[in-house]
Image (tube, rainbow, N blue to C red):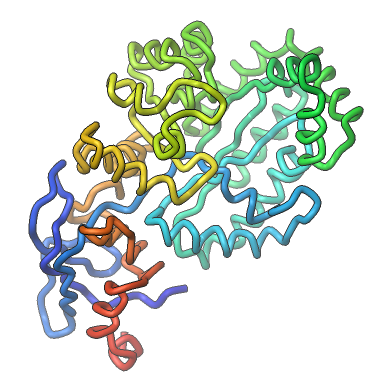
Length: 397
């Protein structure tokens, strides 16, 4: 755990506040942003030449999977992986993150057994975490037989975000048209192709139970207070159906029509930052920048690559699509609001001191503070912090 810093005044920087970048100072104490700090124990850190931005709130990222299993047949201990993920998040300015874990008929690292193991490991690791890591469940729709088990896991581990997705059509198409790709999918989840096809068929056979299953889950989530949505909606009709059961978040709509229907309802639309950075979807779906330019996207998330989040915001600003203030809101203010985290997402007094220190010229993140603690520090920013935070002073704190 990073030792709590003394009260700080971050001076000379450009601060993102009230939807605009303005020259000014930022004060923090006891893990919170404050209107000002007084007294001899306050420390000034000169951050001229830097931008101070709210910590990034990442609603959906599965990049953690590569820390757990960098190769399909080479898994590592979960606690070791979480330690590494925590540090990667901080290095890219992410102070709150949902690890998007599968609850799927696929089994292996995306099955219910592993989901429960990850949730337990995350619960044990959290007291020592630098960032606020949470777990999102990606619930495959065709698993009604696991409903009670899922609800119990959500309650036990305090899981606060679930999205519904259905990969059966994709899997059936792959069986018919590209079985060689299915073999890779099966290997990734640790099984044979024959066993994998059997799982697909069994899940498909449960289609008649899916509507009742989803309604029952939605009712349970409403009672518990879980945010829930859908993932990869292919069209407006699908979004209609998920909206009807109360799923108010539309993750990764694959076509403009699904995003348009979501916005008509006032539902939040979430897209991947890698889609912005790479200039489009890797599988040919709608481009995130298309939805952003049409005001059909509220939030960007890391998806499969954590570094993409701050880079995407900078690219949107540099390309003139949005101001940096509006682009950064898509990765901080908006997701915090959607997930009902009133204590973060802006740099207003009283909020958590989740702060990104970005070099104004290079747009490289050189420091991240999470709850007022230094979670990551590098470059010239490190020199400036360390020049005033002497070891003796930190020891006294």
